[in-house]
Image 1: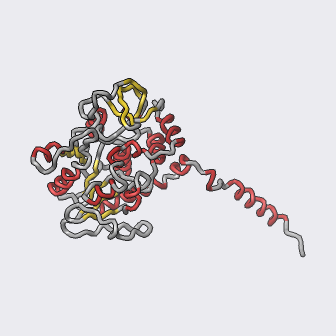
Image 2: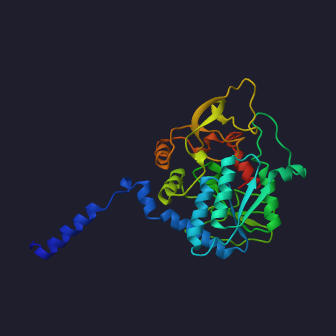
Image 3: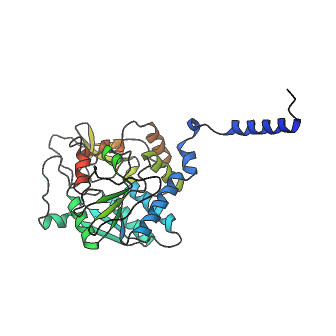
Length: 329
């Protein structure tokens, strides 16, 4: 066989060097993936599709990290214009005060429209009945208030911050999730979603729940908050708080919302909240993570879902799925 010419040998060596410098899949960290903006680009594409396909969309805003992330993504999706749809908060009356204060501050800074509808109004109107007992919560009751608000404003698309990694029922739901005239979700009758083709066609009376960060994980969200330097409510970070223990969970004792028996002793501990739901159904975790970098490091090491501290998900194995079938987001 003949010898390989020198110039060909040089090219082969160059290609070999380039190949050796390509990182393996195993070596890619969450940060390097986020730097490529794949998740951000997907979410922005989804938000723009919502604006293009629907007449009256709304962003469901709870004041938690996921909905705050959605607001930042919406800012980027439509910059330099303002976010072209309102934010809506279904206020249960059991929200953490820090969350409400942050909500009002963010809305004022961005100059966006905020719609607030209260679960207490639904209770006063006799549409729902307040729960009783030590685990009483308004989490389920807010579904009625949400459906009434959708009907009141004729919203045809409701954008939410649910993610597939949170809970098994959410793992089954599409990015464009069609709900019937009663807001109900039929998990056995979902549209196929092929690649990036999102079908927003609905019949009169139906609406779609849209989940732009469905493919993100909890760590993805925290890494994005870290990367974008997004401000979030203080209760996400470690702080001293009066708490009491019940069934192995840490409950806040700084309000009149959470039921506490006489034999449940109050003590001070350093805690934070991984998820921000109602005070009546969200437990804290012991933590020293008082900065975003420490929180990200803590999440990396965690083997428990953030919703492990949500008592409303523990009522039964299918608690979330049943709520979604009834119209929950």
